[in-house]
Image (cartoon, rainbow, N blue to C red; front, side, top):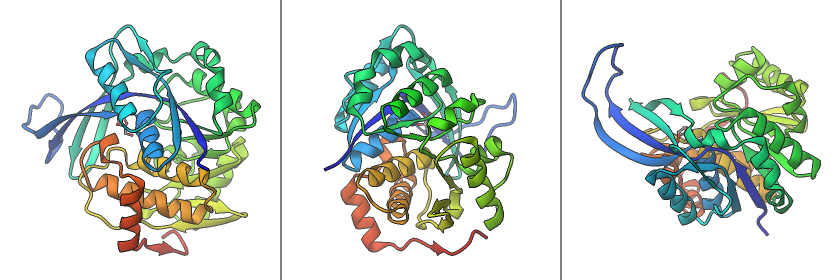
Length: 313
Ligand code: RIB
């Protein structure tokens, strides 16, 4: 039976424009294919979990503007229980995204996400009783991430943290984390070590565990990811696809991974599923909408091979 996952995190609307190059400071250039998409790292990860078949509840906040209601409806359309999402006076979180050559730049105004305070966490304790697993990121106040991690940990729930966008946090947080999933940039800022080969990837993971996290997986962009199984570092490559829009690449990976951890898969298989989820997501435009459902991932995996790796080059 699938496990219950609580996502405590951000809900944004993404304002996206495609461009062949980025403007210089003070310069205006013409882009194309403007789109307003539903995003937010929390909402995207919740969408990926629900699309993979998990039972998902979301705790977060939207504004009292029109886009807030639409964002909640979008979560519900994926089968996510969004009944605890607050409506806070002011705007919904907004991300201005430029997609350039398949990659992106993001500027975020957290808006209503900033109102997910530790008091909101305390007032929603019943969600933590319901959940088996808690999934979080850093687009809500970090004091609230700490409060939620502590509450879930004290109730014996598994706590998974995607430290994105990376922030200074109290070291206390790490002791409540069962699995931390940074990308290489975030891992470097947290540990001071760049994961560029076998030895440094292991050092990064060891450093994250030395901070207090029970386990760590570092995503490495087109190089795949590195993680520990029974004390050994494992590396997994990527499924090769043409990247159209990398927005939610990490979120879809994390959602897919957590979903398969919930299903009791071993890490190697869960990572492969997560990589396939992310590969499909980057091959289409958008954030939450680009994330595939389980059936699409299964079909993709049947027709495509991941590049297996014995080492990080
Ligand atoms: O991780 C991608 C997300 O980051 C986007 O959807 C945007 O909302 C930003 O939060």
